[in-house]
Image 1 (cartoon, protein in one colour):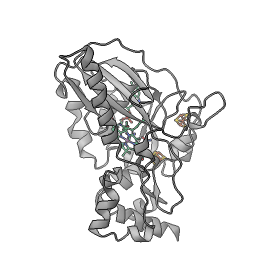
Image 2 (cartoon, rainbow, N blue to C red):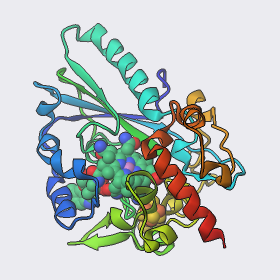
Image 3 (cartoon, helix red, strand yellow):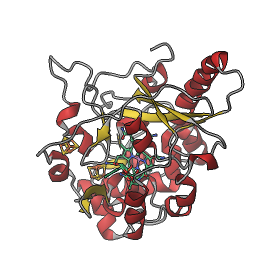
Image 4 (cartoon, rainbow, N blue to C red):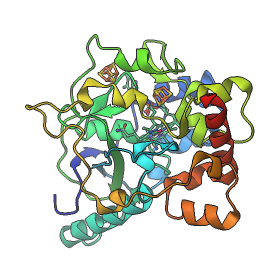
Length: 300
Ligand code: B12
Ligand code: SF4
Ligand code: SF4
């Protein structure tokens, strides 16, 4: 694909159908302290709040899979290289430029992760993948190791069909999750963020309780377990695209981390250098120090 995306599809900009799923998740407190998930609910209900007159959503997928380096600092694969927000937004802007040649007057807005858009649903509707029990969007040929980006546009485009697929009787991720964070809520599988290592190591602010400190185990930033065990992420002769190493050069520029011990007390300058253009900046210096301390404690 010319811009380097691994998946692309288009759907209409009609309101999200899974809003009740999100509302229920929030009503049960499963968003933990991510207050922005609750306050942005009204924005998520209508893409016109982001781009007035929006007609179409171009959803893209970008593979980030790679083997993590040998280190006692365990970082989830999505965060090993350059910040995906910047990488994907740059590519989406180029895509908008290409579209402008055919639709010179169209208005557009790129979004990845941080905008109040129910990205998994729109990506599903655009044909990129289906919802796994671990709640990740899974593409039957590529698995789930991909980011989702969207380009909203006022142009009317031809639409793809929603992706079809499912986990069947598999429950590998539910059994493998060390904290039991994948739970059923009114018939839908959801992640209770309060018990999710990814949430605890990235989004949770302040000190850990004793339980939380133990829950994170040896993960310093994020968690990949429910994707590592997924059969759709295991390559086979007939499915060579699964767990293929990313071809995005910015993701392959893997940051070198100091030891866990050093991470517990980084200077402001060192932190600045380490977290520059990296997703780990999200956890803040104090969060990474807290995580590294808990990792060290969990080793003994
Ligand atoms: C909040 C958030 C988190 C939270 C909560 C995770 C969660 N599962 O909700 C935490 C911090 C724990 C987290 C962790 C991770 N995240 Co996150 N996260 C988000 C964010 C900002 C919002 C997700 C959200 O709305 N959650 C609320 C719940 C209720 O929604 P949901 O799980 O997405 O489920 C939707 C669908 O599954 C669907 N659905 C589910 N059941 C049903 C049933 C029916 C009938 C229907 C119609 C629909 C439906 O509707 C739900 C609501 O839209 C999105 C970006 C975005 N703007 O969407 C990224 C996003 C989901 N995260 C992403 C990633 C990569 C991760 C991690 C892998 C990072 C890591 N390695 O640590 C983990 C994976 C953990 C996991 N198993 O989900 C990617 C996922 C890509 C993919 N292929 O799925 C996203 C899309 C970011 C991006 N732009 O690429 N994340
Ligand atoms: S990211 Fe880790 S803690 Fe969170 S649901 Fe998946 S396996 Fe469980
Ligand atoms: S591990 Fe199994 S149950 Fe979990 S998402 Fe993958 S296929 Fe579905």
